[in-house]
Length: 246
Image (cartoon, rainbow, N blue to C red; front, side, top):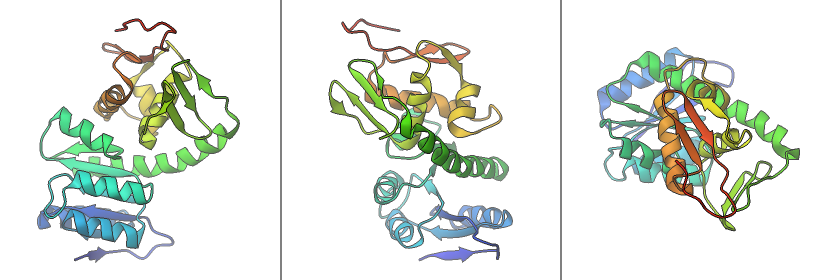
């Protein structure tokens, strides 16, 4: 069953809130409405998939632990049907859960309990990122392929291949990898990556960068992105003859 909360506004943003705790779901929906957006609430994963197909929301807030179908499976199905930014909510501060969630297609995560102010800030950043991504994609149409031998990144087609095999990356993972790969061996701070990839103007989401890097390493191997402790990350192009990196 879907609940609706809305404020009349010209072309309002539609946010699908997927949460099985009624009190929390209502609180999130009310806060979204206060921003002038439209909030729709689904109480389980299966209803969320159906709602996303019908509503075509601008953003999805997805709890991981859900009845009928869990949030990870629901996220996979929603993103596969139509690209949409997904913010996952998890009750455990477990890095493995976050990496799995990002690998399922989510763009960001928050650990319960959280402040509504931070939740809205994250939502605004994700919505800005969608608009920014359109500009980046347009600018990348004539960008040259980044060929590092065994690793090939095509900014125009938004594809990545390793040893000739295509690797599926989420939109955020691709943007993060491409941002690092455009400046090989150069160290980019977490704050700079937040600004370039997520369009954030503060450092509150540095752990999000860390989790996305771990997700990329899981898919591409541990050596392509080097950690510079206390600073950020650097892209290390694979050498013709593989050598172990950091």
